[in-house]
Amino acid sequence: MNSCIYILSYDNPTHIKTLNTLEKSDNKLPIYIVVESDTKYLAEYKKQDYNLIVFDRNDVQVDLMDNFADKTGTLLQKRAFIFEHAKQHGIDSFIMLDDDYDTFCYRIIQNNVLKEIRIKNITNKHLIQ
Image (cartoon, rainbow, N blue to C red; front, side, top):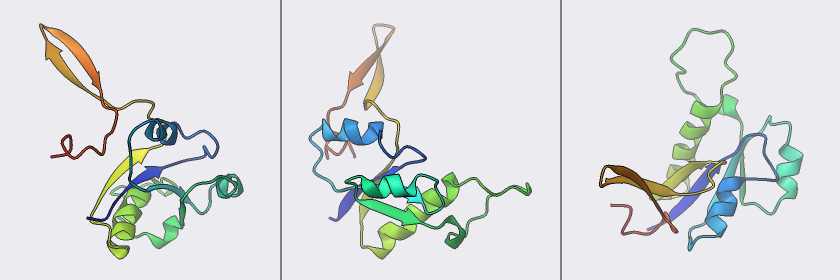
């Protein structure tokens, strides 16, 4: 199975919390940082040691499902792009994350108290079923 992790980043080239969090885990999957071609920080992203994927949001056709004149929102286009990228590159499964995660956890109620259980490796096959 060909799998990877995509981190959607926005105007944050030097401090991607999610990348730091994954580096502390037992992750073995390739990690790709995804940014728009028109970000004002593109040069800074390129200076970093990232597996960087740059896309042009104008090349991604999605229905934003609104009638506003301003079409600058890129989150929907970025997520749609990732599905197309994975399909074109034979990626069978992937995890799509934003750039600001400092922990991974799940929560349970135990004795009427909400407990947080931290996950060291979100790619653990026993957790993803």
